[in-house]
Image 1 (spheres, rainbow, N blue to C red):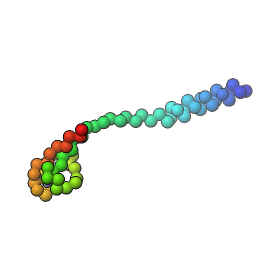
Image 2: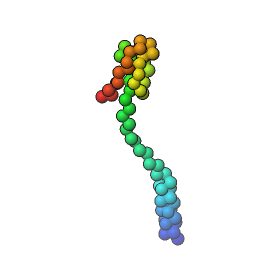
Image 3: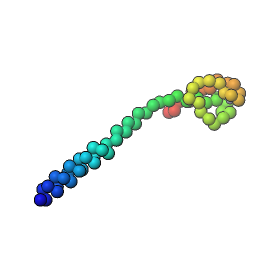
Image 4: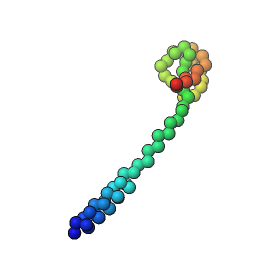
Length: 64
Ligand SMILES: [Zn+2]
């Protein structure tokens, strides 16, 4: 009888471990960010453009 219980618990363990297997991919996406060279605002931009305050070209921030 004990063998059956062991077998059942092992089976339950297998089912649980299969169900909890959430594949988390940590893909590091290096996104370029841009900011005003005069730092008019603290906000960063995801696309190049011009500052809305001083109308200077946004500069890319290198995240080193
Ligand atoms: Zn600016």
